[in-house]
Image (cartoon, rainbow, N blue to C red; front, side, top):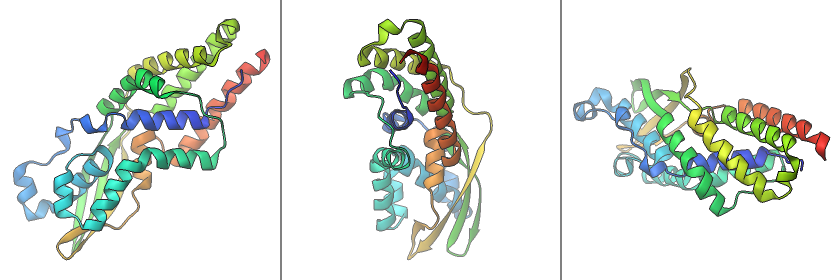
Length: 250
């Protein structure tokens, strides 16, 4: 009955975040038409449309027009492959067994979780500095604390399994309860109160822009609500606690 969750938690969370990214409404992050046209506001325009596209699949036409072809294709590849990238990251760092969600389970249990992420996460330009052929953009990031929601779901799952172990002899019973608990916890989970700040740099090459800094950590924080280090530490705590609680019934 003992289950290891690190891969399962990470993979499920990735699917949850990006399950309905194309539907995200993000009007508050868009600059007004007058701001976009003003030369002094180019930093805000470039900075916002890049994250809108590379993370939320918005502003594709703008990015295609304003950025180099190579940068556009790179951003599009990141958008298309982020789920697999994060799965691979988790597999490489910990060879835990997956939780066992089927495609049907994903659709049934994760659609509501995805909606919560869509409603409760955002990135907006906080400030920017323009230099010759360069803009340095600092973002405010608010994200759902997905790890905390998973912790509550796993804690409640362990409690139910310890109370009625005979009801959870089949994997499908465990999966069903965990899916329902996960939906509830994500629906109840508020956005993290603190704003997280991240900076990216863009340079202009022959009238087109390209990203010259690494956006991996920014993307990870939007996804998990935590940095890499915080995520690893917290999920290991959840896994250890779950295994210890169920050890007595093995």
